Length: 434
Image (cartoon, rainbow, N blue to C red):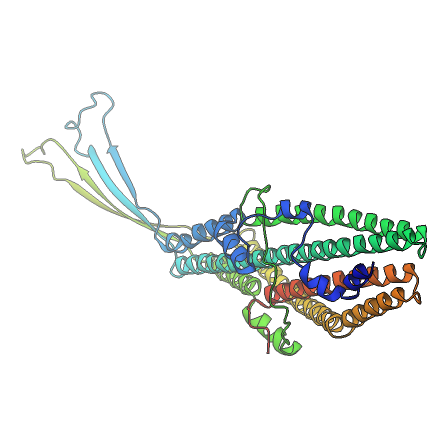
């Protein structure tokens, strides 16, 4: 029994020795090479099908500006003119011709340039959309990865506490056998063990869900296993000022760049609608081939024609005026949407920054004060229990409290890093630290 008490008295050393001990169910979940955060992000950026779809759309839109800047295809025409229907002869009448012509449409100067400009702005908006989706994907991967890391650490804590509580049961049984303990102490320890088993089931279920989510983001089979590193750098760096973060977000956030380009495209379409008050032109040339001879016996000469036409915007009140009003309304829509997105980005930056600092303060509090004090309390309770000054209930409660604090510490660390991932995505760049 003295050996058992000494083992429990030095439970801090026991925690270190048992840090790698997991329940058999936990070991079955984790297998293979550890998946670091950077590796998870790289695999998602390389293989995520949703991101690939947006990239394909951006490539498609990038091909439009040159098309919009090109002239319409010329029209080739082949005609038979003035063919007599009584004989269908090409030589009977002097004006019978076999004609070959070509016609080219010429939009009013400036229209093609404006169409190309609007298409280029839409293409650049699509490129910015792709960059923003990459940021969101990285944010999602980091969020799930840190959730998974927290759950793994929670499983470690549960496993260590199960081992220690089993030792408590042994101690209670030994004391009860020699008449120095109570049966209720044994039942109490067994109840706490059952509670840990329930927590283990719940955490394992949550871990399975997070594994499936992370696999989907990386385009892996949803049923694949994932093992994370056992340790990471737990340091949380200080952020730059809120004002600087907001300024960087306005300058760097791809979604704002995309909306700015869309607003520019809408402005170009307004200018293009105003150009429609001017006519478009068509020019063409026709070569007429004639057969037969003139009355004097000479060969009939071939004929050539030049064509020119233009549309007349006579109904501008019901067409061009309305089109300009439409395009102006669309431009105002994009302008208001840009302002709305700026407000949303500012809110996202502020909320993520607040969450990061709050979680960071919790991490520091758990690291420097709460957990060390809770461990000292457990050690003191063990020492008091050995000499009969502390009852078994308080001993178990102190160990359970330490278990809760350790779990909350890892939860706070995970929350801080998730908030940091949201902040980076909201700002649009990695450099958010001092």
